[in-house]
Image 1: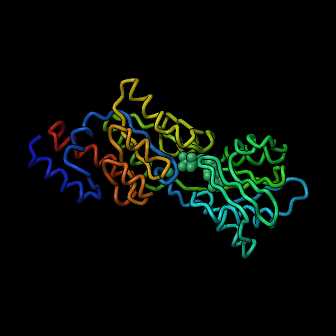
Image 2: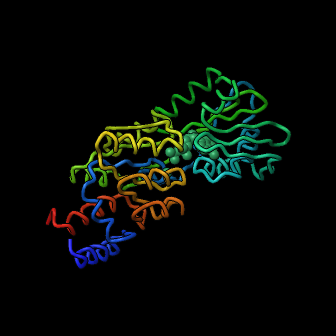
Length: 293
Ligand code: ADP
Ligand code: MG
C-alpha cells in the first residue's frame, strides 16, 4: 500500500475508535487467521460482583467476609474488587491485614487478625496441602456450571467457604465474534479462570475453542504454540497478565479500558473497549491494503 493509503487508513481507524501505533501495523493485520480473546475484561465486562457465600460447618458468614474482604481489599484483581466491595457492604469496616501477598493467577494470601488467610483458586489450597470439604466442592461445581467464578476462602489450615462471583458478557461481544468469523478468523477464548466458567462464556458469545486454567506466564506460550502451528495470531486483551502475549502476537490489540501494561504492549488500542472494534481494525487493514473493497 502507498504511504498515503496507510495514512488514510490510520485516520479512519481513529474515527472508529482504533489507535494504531504505526502505519506498518496495518500490513501485519492482513495475514491474521486466528484471534485469541482474553475472557475477563475483554469478552466480559470485568466488573464482577459478589453474588453468593457458601460456608462449611459452623463457619460464620460475616467472619468469612471480614477476613477475605480485608485481604482482597489490597488486590487489584477484578475478583478481588468484587469480594472487597461485597464484604464491605455486608460486614462493614474491614480490618487491615498484618501481612499481604498477591499471587498472580491464583489469589491472595496474608495474615488478618492473627489468622493465616488464603483466598483464591482451589489450586492455591492444594499448594498448601488443603482439601475442599464435600459441601464446598458441590457449591463450587454448581457455581462454575452456572458460569460463575468460584474462589475458596481458607484460614488456619482449613477451607471454610466458597465465594461466588459473577461477571457479565459485554452486550457487543456476540456480534463481535460473528464479525470476526465473517472475516474468516477462528476465535479462541483464553483465560486463567476455570474451564466450566470459560465454556459457559464461550457458548454465550459463539466461540467453540476454549483454553482455560492457564497461568498468567503461560498465555504467551499459547500464542507461540499457535504460531508454530503456522497460524498468524491476533491477541486481544486488557490485563497486566496479557501484556507478554500481546507483544508476542503478530497483532496485539489492547482494550483502551484495560491496564497501561497491555496498552503499551499492543500494536493498537481499541479505545472504547468494544470488541467489535477488533473486527473493524482487521477489516480496515484489509481495505487499506486493497484486499477487500
Ligand atoms: P483471567 O485470565 O481470567 O484474567 P487470572 O489469571 O488473573 O484470570 O486469574 C485466574 C484465576 O485466579 C481467577 O479466575 C481467580 O479464580 C483466581 N484469582 C486470581 N487473583 C485472585 C484474587 N486476587 N482473589 C481471588 N482469586 C483470584
Ligand atoms: Mg482480562
